[in-house]
Length: 404
Image 1 (cartoon, rainbow, N blue to C red):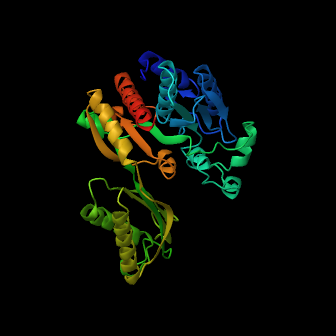
Image 2: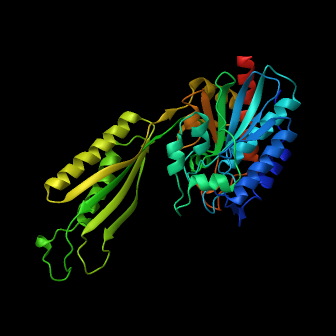
Image 3: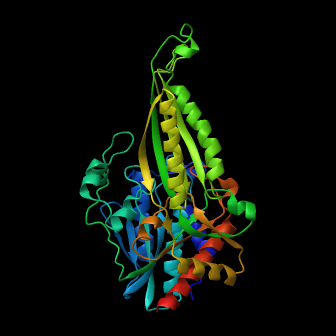
């Protein structure tokens, strides 16, 4: 039996939050001194739990259950966005530690519990670096070219952290499944009152940069009918997206125009150039393609009207379904514990979307207070943190029995 100890779980979470503590949150950027210190601390906790701990060249921390040939892998990440929250990723890592520790305390099994803390999920240098490296999806060219927004190279960050050795590789013969827990980072669970969400899949993402070219003129002396205003077509595109996407969208579709700017950006100059960023997400790849086509068709119409508008796809991530059998196991675990649950897709990317391409994978969410995340206001009630860990521990126990 895997019986977690709630007080120990919460104490470890709060101890981890001291590394990079910033007001009520955490500032623990990938490869920062605070990040490396946290990873070294975690490796020590793994060893104290009886796991064989290692840190690879990227900073991914791995704890292997000794004496077994097969294991359930549980984990997430501890790096944060700047001035971020204390639970985003970190909770899933400590779940892994606590469940692996409790599994060993509960007696031997033919299948153990391994745990992992991936590096740079937040993308300071290379999004989901640790999980992508673990499945062999990052090559040396990408590593050599990766850098942070302030221009620091990933290779320099690795050297500065003193990390060496080969990347940790996934072994599908050993790791029979991957489980990840996360705070929801949204308001649905808090609204429904359920304790956990069982994730059906991670949404696909399409991100576009749309550019419009016009001509700069004096805004006070150039008649409206004689202007070539670069911004106006993008404003029309924004209105089109708001209306047309609403018609086409499913209940899981989200979209955002996160940036729009005009050049030269003066009140008395007709814009000579303009840019707009558009992102849309959905778990259905066919719907994503439909939305993409709608935007492309509208841009073509704008060009016919006299504007010169072009677009570039800057991100295209396919939806990643989670394993149905693992989702059913999470559901049974929630029922066994008499916790309310629901199923939903994840609107954000996670390390699980890479592990899921190689081994059966599943995720659960716990409620976020106010739906807040990626901010120092991020928080979850202690009882919900504990409930999520109990569900994951019960699911791990069921999976161990089913695969033994």
